[in-house]
Length: 118
Image (cartoon, rainbow, N blue to C red; front, side, top):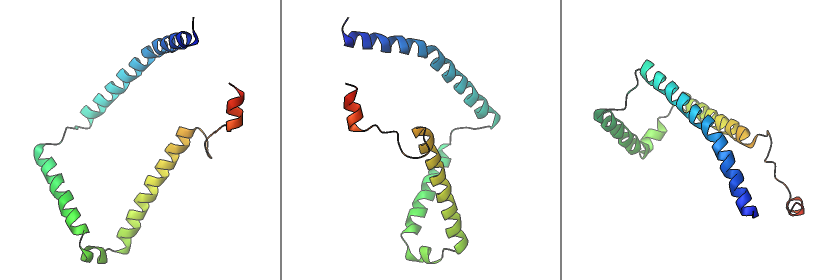
């Protein structure tokens, strides 16, 4: 057997082993989402709600272009926006740390050590 065939066989075997748990977890997540959807009384937005949201965005974008809008912002509004931005940044950073599986930096091997294994 060639190396490519062995690798493909290994990938296929791994995918077969993982397909059962993945399908099971997807079904569990779907059922939980369905229960939350029902319990919270959630529903997709109606056409009127979509139109109202569109109008709200258009109104906001027109107001944002006006200099008088920016002159009338209070200190509390600025602090509130800053707090929300800091919170979003903190969640982003936690996601980065979880994704890296490391608190500081990525675990990058040097080019010399990478070529030594081949």
